[in-house]
Length: 208
Image (cartoon, rainbow, N blue to C red; front, side, top):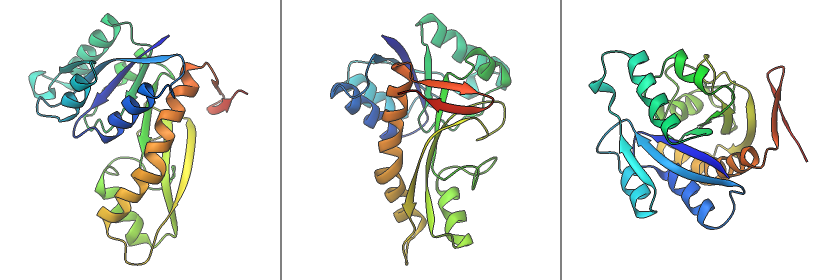
């Protein structure tokens, strides 16, 4: 059974979909062992507690720099034997030491079709505002492995979502979550836990 650690910063809607998938038996050979929030008031912690999952807050402001904070995250995850780290709306910057501690074992969901609308500054509503400002007709979500490049790691799964006339950033954000993020993330996590993902030359291969 692959031990999963989920990192969050806010309400935890993606976390809830992972919890729901786990309870439904849709995450095969995996189990969420701990949820770590970068803010003590993150509602995601309540979601974890309701599901009987250990929930802890490691606040960035309690640490002098990024690397020290990242090491605290590494220590907390290693102490619990975590093998897969899932960034589910985790908005705090981590250092290269964090990525290096879990090579091809940190999964992130991004609310656009990478490499479009990715990188520094593209998070949350900012992504959807940029999509609408550019006038693209299709957006979507991407689940990828995190590496040293912001939103630049190997792509695992993607799903397209239609941009509709009259969309606001908030309406588009909701559609992308419902039609793509909430579908892709549990699926990608299960694929990892089943041992069906392999990274070759920066490309993710999904084994049958």
